[in-house]
Image (cartoon, rainbow, N blue to C red; front, top):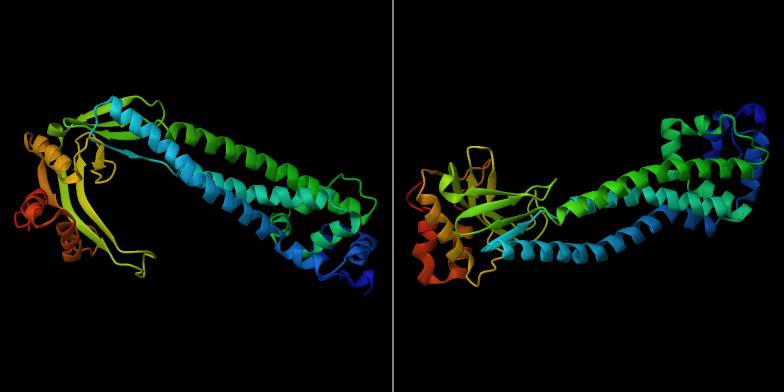
Length: 325
């Protein structure tokens, strides 16, 4: 193929020619291409690095979550709580986005410092991945190369890789800082349920806000069943006791049946809270959500089996079965 045809000697370099890559440098990069099997590795390099990162996240997540649970338990114990709940997860989600961007940084570093022919092979085979598509989509190659002195095809790849490292590195540092900040705050951002009140700690300051059960305004009651492997959900069947509480100031909370810490079961503790709520002027409603059955028979059956026949009337009274229907 001739330079005047404006067709690159390698199809992955067509855009690079439009960004100002001299034809002889495109030929140099193409000649340095080692081909398979190294090119296969280049095609999969982005996915290899990103999957390694996700494997580390999967390993770290339960460890960090356990640390957050420990802090919440300590806080609830100090406040004399019957149960507690946490708000962990936002920091890890932000961290995963940071790693996705960091993957491009890692791949760019590998390409930048690889031997000349390996560099060319990885660049050509990786053009369809993040390192190639993102600059191409935003037209960044042309901007990045403006004023850059390029003497060889290797200089061109190095310039692109260095700009990619600089650009993505800054984004990674920004997202990582946010993730660390959220993790720091999440360890203080928890909820405690006592016999008298709901204590919610502020995300920003960690200062507790107390909301008396007797001051509650509205209560929604129900029992929700989520079918296993349904069209909207992939996983085992789920059963949820719905006891949602709202106050006039906009505060709301769903009572948990997990993380009971006072030696009693969840039914005992929910009955204690229910009794405190009834001492006030709260209005009870049946829970509603789209086309859900607010008292799904399978959900009711699940918890009746869990609690035993001797507690059937207690569960029915808690959920106002027959009273709100």
